[in-house]
Each structure stands twice: as structure tokens, then as C-alpha cells.
Length: 145
Image (cartoon, rainbow, N blue to C red):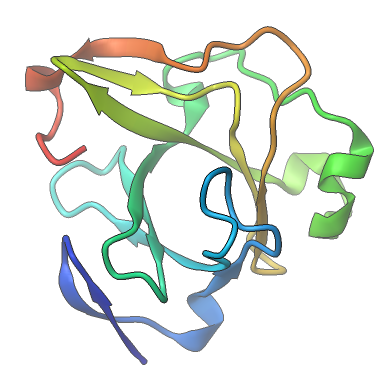
């Protein structure tokens, strides 16, 4: 199937690549169907693209790429709907933002994804993680991130 995107034009995806976020995401509760797209320039960055809203996409990264000991601390109730047999099977991503000349990553509200079940959820962690961990100057990273 083909989806329209504002950043990448029309993109061909398989129906089984669609990730369902039953509760949407913080601030975007109506956006429930997403797909992960690779960044053609920076392999460390992916894009979580809304299937239905072509203008809605988030740059995402593995938080462990920047904080090696990063752990998601949430109640089991928070991740139970994902149907993970083991919590270690979870795929964890963090949303990247650009603010002025800084690139930040949100470690407070990561995305937890069960890739086998094609279901995800954005959670708010229980411990003291930064909402905007500064990664560096925007000139060090791809401008669109």
C-alpha cells in the first residue's frame, strides 16, 4: 500500500508494517496508525510516520545510543497491553526535537513497541529522566531532525 508523507513524498509500505498505538501518543490521541521509516542520510535516526496524517512524523532514536545505561521504569500495567512475553523484547525509541540550535531527545516519555505484535505505546517513566536531553548543536545532525 502507498501512504503520503510531507517529508518523503509517497512511500510504499506493507500493511503488516503498520504499528498500532491504541491510545495514540501524548498530544496526538487520534493518530493510532504509524510506520517506522529509515532515514536515508543518518542511520541512527528513524521516522515514526503517521499513516493517516501525512504531515505528522517524529524523528526517533534509540535512547541507549546517547545514554548507555538508560532504562525504562514504568509499572507492568503500563506495558501489559503490548503483549510482550518478556520486557526485554520491547523496542524502545525516544522522540528527537529541535529547539533553536539544539537537538534534544525526550527520555521522560519513550515509545515502547512490540514489533512482533505491531503494537506500541508512549509511556511516562516513573524515575527522574529529562524531557529534553540536549544532544548537541543542530549543525552536527541532519537539519530535518
